[in-house]
Image 1 (cartoon, rainbow, N blue to C red):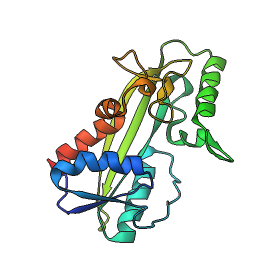
Image 2: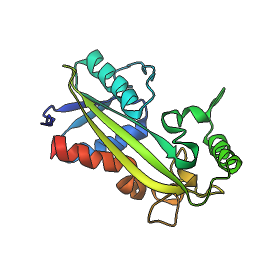
Image 3: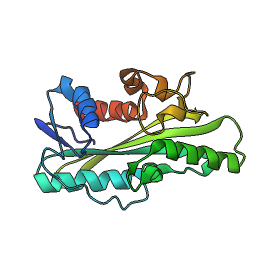
Length: 203
């Protein structure tokens, strides 16, 4: 039996303002007030797991334990069939440089790797999102969302972030990088996971 969410406040285990706004808007109809880990000056825990669910659990449980509030976190990334599911949980790591994240470099690296292995077209890939809703007593609920699609080259569009300019979602002829942010948010992997979360814990 899925545990329903009945608290007035939910801590979102993120330091990303955009992510907080996106989640707060989705939960607004249920009268839930959202605050971020940054609002509580929480450190970002080390993500030491090798799966999306493992890393999302680390973040959610650390925040719930530190504050006594129910907390939600997500871990997301892109998996590419021709690269045996890479970069997966290491999606952001592929963009790391000494001066911050460089996703143009990461996308270029990804394209070069696909060329090296002579990956056939279409180059199938999936954006994946795992949401974990954790309570201070240690209980959690897990929801996974997937957006299938394919990779294109060269990069297209300047909307979105991360790998969006080379990812064309299934059923569309534009990349996430060419899509309006709110339009993308309706169909994304995160939206898929959220629909399941809302249906089971809030609706």
